[in-house]
Length: 334
Figure 1 (cartoon, helix red, strand yellow):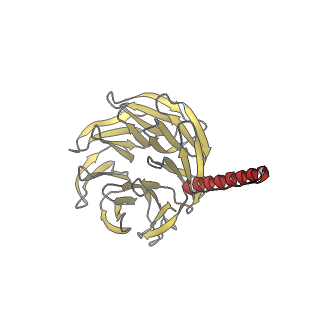
Figure 2 (cartoon, helix red, strand yellow; figure 1 turned 90 degrees about the vertical axis):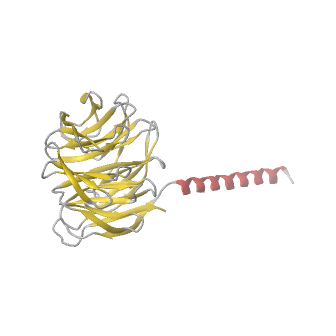
Figure 3 (cartoon, helix red, strand yellow; figure 1 turned 90 degrees about the horizontal axis):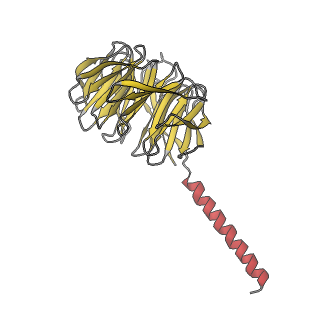
């Protein structure tokens, strides 16, 4: 074989390898699409969704009740009644109980997950909104919007451990880091994250979230110690949870509400009801990379991720008065 032919063959092989590598990389990039729409019915208000990846149930807050959907069959499996103005719900499968935040009555319903019956109600601060469960301490933290405080409940007993931890602003969502003994809370009206010491039960720092403002969604990458914050000005920021330094930011949609994180795929999701989009973001230690702007529906603002199937769920309706249009939208990777 001549030298020219060898050189041509080498160039050809290099091109083939390059194309093959590019194809593999492209195939590895996630691409979400609409899989189905689950009809629930009704058109009253709704707020957070919660995916229990262990119990395989999706809990969807809906006015005065929580709708329960089987995530393996995508069918409505039941409902939890008497949760006036409910904002959020969390399930604790190992305890076979869940907790709601009933905004209109300043209480949390403690629910038997097997029967979906309320076993007791616990008094919270004014207008309880988002809530979280921290398994190491066994505590449920409820963030009270009008009360600008956090109520702490012992999950096993439903006993109130702390009536109200002052937060210094209107809380929106929270995330916990048991190893650092910290709870991080978005303060929507002050453009900050409050850092709460879980042992001392008090705010020990407040960190600005600029260039984001009006923080709503909050997710946490425990491995990288990164807070992922969705702002009302269409900005998502990544903050170091050890010192509050904003490391990276990225543009996202209008009317941002929820943020979530999938630790296996290392993808973060920010839902925006104004633009009807979910921004899908690859999270690395020092940067954020948008990998997809998923078109959903205008008004679809609240969201959760099932870390087992990597599907994301959003709630929406044509209007809050339409008697039939409330639904859950299911998106998954191709």
